[in-house]
Image 1 (cartoon, protein in one colour):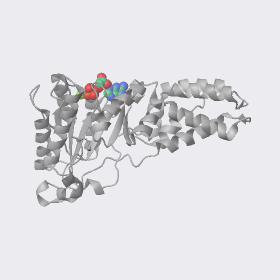
Image 2 (tube, helix red, strand yellow; image 1 turned 60 degrees about the vertical axis):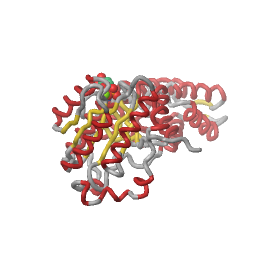
Image 3 (spheres, helix red, strand yellow; image 1 turned 120 degrees about the vertical axis):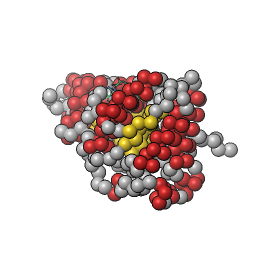
Length: 350
Ligand code: GDP
Ligand code: MG
C-alpha cells in the first residue's frame, strides 16, 4: 500500500486547478501573464554576481587544473584522469558528475594530448547536460495570491531568502503578506517582522509556541481578503524531532490548501551551499516528503563548495530557482544554468 504522504496535494486540488479562479477567491493579480520582471534581483549580469560568488570555488579549481594541464596540454592517461577526478570533487560536485567529466575526457582524448580549452569545453558541456532544467520562474497563481511556503533546516537562510523574495516582488510592484510560521523560536518571528517593516510587507504572527498552521492560515486568508499578490510563509527548521517537523509542515500545507485550492504554488527548499555535500542530506529529508517545487541555494558567496548545485540538480530533479549571494535583500539572483557553468569553469586569468 502506498505510504500516506502528508505533503501530497489532494486529488481535488490536482483535478480542479481552476477552482482558484472562481469569483470568491479575491483579486486576480494577472501575474502569471506578465512577462518576467527581474527588478529587485542582482543585476550587473547574473554572470557578474554568480562569478563573484563562486570565486572561492573557482580559485581552487583554477589553480589545480592549470597545474594539471600545463601550457601545452597534457597526455590523457589513467594517472591524468585520476588526478582530474580528484580536483573536480573538491568543489563538492560529487562523484557522479566528476566521473562523467572524466569519462567524457577519456572517451574523446585518451592517448592524445588534451588542451586546457578542450578540457574546459568538455567539462562545461557535460555539466550543462546534467543541470538542464525548466525555467527558474516562480510558479504564479493563475488567480488570487501566489502562495509560497519556505522550508529548510535552521540557519540555512530561509528568513533572509524571504526578505530577498519580498524585495524582488516589491520592486515588481506586487503586494506581499508574510506569515511568521517559525513560531518555535521567538527570534525568528522578530527577524521576519523587522524585514516586513523595512520593506513594507504585511505580516501575520503568532505568540511563541503557538500553532504555525494557524499563522499560515491567517496569512493566506489575509492575502486573499486584501487581494495581495503574494503570500510567503516562513516555517521552522527544527522541532523536537524530525518527525514532528515533517508533520507540522504537512499541516501547514493542508491549511493553505483549504484557503486556496491550488496553494501552495511553490514550496521552496532553502539549502546552505557552504554545507557542500551535507546540503544534499538536508535536502533529502525535506524533499522526500515536503513536496518541494524548487530550491534556493543560499550563501553561494561564502562557499568554497559551490559545485554542490550540480549534484543537487542531478539528485532531486528540482529546479534551482534562486541563489543567495550575500546577506542583504539585493544579494539575490535568478539561477541560470549557463551563467553558473560558465562561472564555475572560468579558469581564465583574473
Ligand atoms: P533560517 O534559520 O533558515 O531562517 O536562516 P536565516 O535566514 O536566519 O540565515 C542564517 C544566517 O545566514 C544569517 O546570519 C544570514 O544573514 C545568513 N545568510 C542567509 N543567506 C545568506 C547568503 O546568501 N549569503 C550570506 N553570506 N549569508 C547569508
Ligand atoms: Mg528563520
